[in-house]
Image 1 (tube, rainbow, N blue to C red):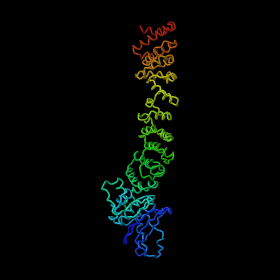
Image 2: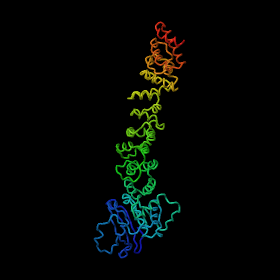
Image 3: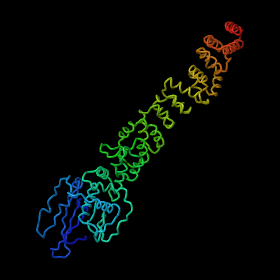
Image 4: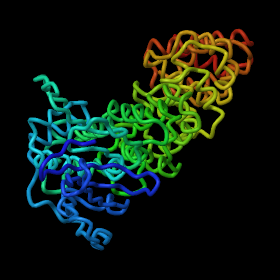
Length: 511
């Protein structure tokens, strides 16, 4: 039992599981009773509603009355009526509160001989008031030393308990003590009550939440803090806190900043078995509003976490697809795999810079999509700057005019890969009809070089002659001579008598 003498009394608080009520008991000696050791106890039975709404539980201490003899008094059975905002007339002492906090949450034992009972009880009630309803109902204590402890008793008083060490205080103590001594509802109190409500409460939780409170006092929540929360609390615990951290709360009641979209996606990948409830529409809404500055980082993280994300991958990708821009896809920090996936679903993102990031095989795949004429031209121009493979040779011949014109432009800029010269040499006959379309002397000479000055078949003679006639005014003297010699060779090879007009033209100029 508890230690009590004279007119003094002590408080006991414990839950009554069978009735789901909480008993706050004050006990006095009863020396007037015939048997030695008798006591009087006045019990306040507190229901869940009062425990969940009464801001300051210290006001309950004023309701206890010492029974007087055997006289019946119906007031002891009367319901309690309290203003939920009523506060104790005097705040508890901070030093005492710090001792009680350490006793409750850090296993400090108090020496009853050195404690003022009234100040101690005020501190206990202040610490109790700080707790959220679920923890309040589990708070078991006595304000005196006992020969035996109550089950799961939060704090213990002993006579002759060893003094506490003078080491540094735990990191949560200052914030917790400041809140417990406050005469107003602090932001920490709101934090504890919102996020403690769906946690399986024990003595370790409050210090952890106080520390998390300090770690979440920023405009943006870091990945490490969010990861700690999701790791610390198992599925079914701290769901309110987890949802607020992830930005998935259906209400606007969150008291902390949420992680950014990149960290949200990473956390969903790393903790997909945490069973945090969310609606697909919620995630879609979050990712569809991603800031453009974070899309490159998000795309990289998305591809790295693809296997872990499961079906969330498609959800995230479909949400950000409409807001992707070419700059994001062009960025070297955006993986080629992601860029290909994005362009495959939105072909308008295929720009020359993006094309340059893809392999020939990737471009062959994209060629099968609904590309614009200009995009196909850009693809072919990019391919012709690479070593010739067997991927695009047939496609290059599907539009000889455009292919040759692009090759001439690339060759003039020294960008055409040497392996493509052999391709044009080998397929010169496929470009015969294009020769007559050439629009400058430089293009004429460049085409002749690319096609290897072809002499077969005979059908090449007239197109080359027409191209010469159309562009001779823009030929340099050396290039004109080169073209005339080529035309003479063609005429001789295929029968000079067949081309008297050509012969007259070139011989006069060659003289």
